[in-house]
Image 1 (spheres, rainbow, N blue to C red):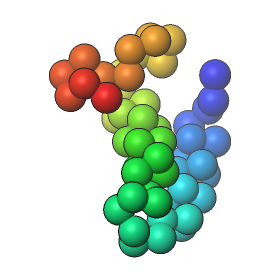
Image 2: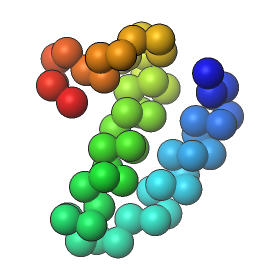
Image 3: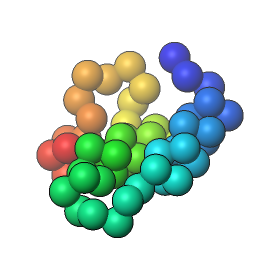
Image 4: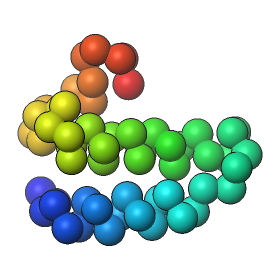
Length: 56
């Protein structure tokens, strides 16, 4: 399991790698969304479901 600092660092790296092209950025934005859910406590860290509410 990743710690808080590792998640924040990975989030910053992903955000810096965004190109502005929606199609190229889709996978990166999905990873960013998953990290933000973990940081905000939206998703249980050991759950195999990413997000029941939004269907991700």
